[in-house]
Length: 149
Image 1 (cartoon, rainbow, N blue to C red):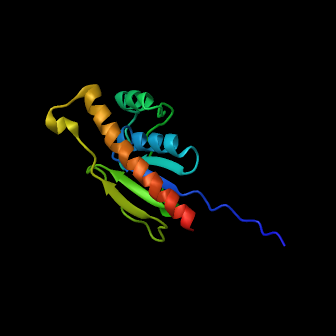
Image 2: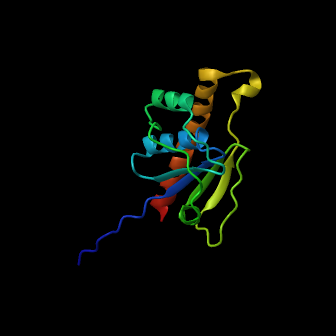
Image 3: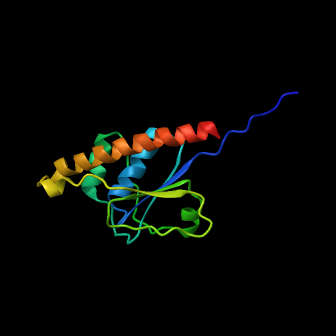
């Protein structure tokens, strides 16, 4: 008798920042780039802005990822309830758990080079690189978790 093995569902992550125009979009683009479809990726903002940060999009493109088609959006409570992981980037945003939430919430206190007088493209590249290291670590963790289920 042949038994079919069912693929485990893809892990899912929601990246959140205040405006959803910079850091959370960067994290989502980097995760999509590195995961190549192995992770369901979303982003949102607690107080969504109007546009994507152009400088963020430019430095993400330098890394081979793309956030140019993204747009700021609010947190969808249904999505919040079902994702495996919610990652809040920076200290400006706070996510309150919802009843029956499947996943966990963690906060990444990302590098803020402007506090050291670093601005512009140099600042944004440092922010990108910090987020990228964290995204790759999260991807490895999610892959390990999915493999163990």
